[in-house]
Image 1 (spheres, rainbow, N blue to C red):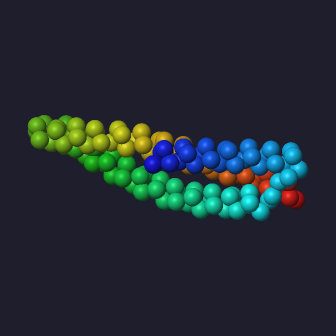
Image 2: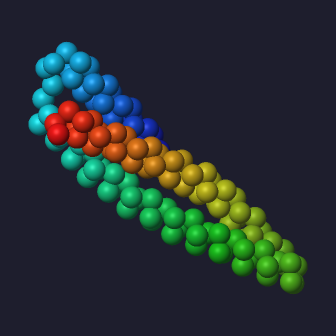
Image 3: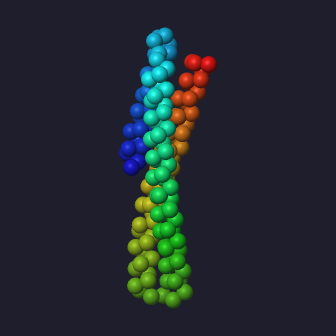
Length: 124
């Protein structure tokens, strides 16, 4: 998923740079850039949904990990300790993935804001 967001960020930056170049050349078309900005917002909404789902899954694994560690500490039992390690081994990648997902979506927000600013700046 993060690879997809990374490509989306690169595409948005490319579109912004192209728009700025067209404005400098005096041959911009606000309609096409406005359409791209609308499409970007739709894609951001999909990423927001994905981010929410990953947050819920990450929180679930954090709670399960915490609970299993508490149980292991209160009554050391090998099977529960193994489950704790397994939950922890899943929690760490989920946290890393969510971190990248969150930062990618935040970057897309800033690029969307830049697109809106360019449209307002060049069209009243």
